[in-house]
Length: 193
Image (cartoon, rainbow, N blue to C red):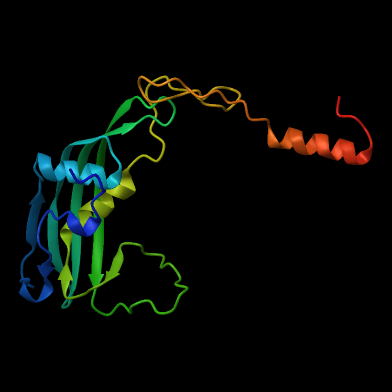
């Protein structure tokens, strides 16, 4: 059994669309709904406990003579571990996605690149990869710190959680600032007690 996480290039919901084959007079409609095996690959790639539903649908339409615009809806139901208790947290994601592929947009050069104000614009290449756009949109929409209902951090900020069936490790480490304060008092010739 392969336990490594798949790379985004290994998970494909559809083949990239060659720009030269697009009809500049009418939009191209798409509706991506991967099966359970592909959803499991996506979940592994994104570090999710599960991906129950996933749908990315919309239109790719001409924008002027050479440019293209993608407008889509992302819908997903994900399962992640709670950041506090590790209990499963189910989250529904519904996001609007918009991208513009511009033929005249210059490619970034050099090591330092300034971020454009319009983050929906991308340079138009030879193909538009709707799979990659769908997976990127999902990754960006994931909650960073999901919490189960009622899950709260202890007031002292320490966590005493462990995976199911394991005993939590006790936090016996001394506060590093208390150790620095004690050292300062020793150097000053006073006692910290």
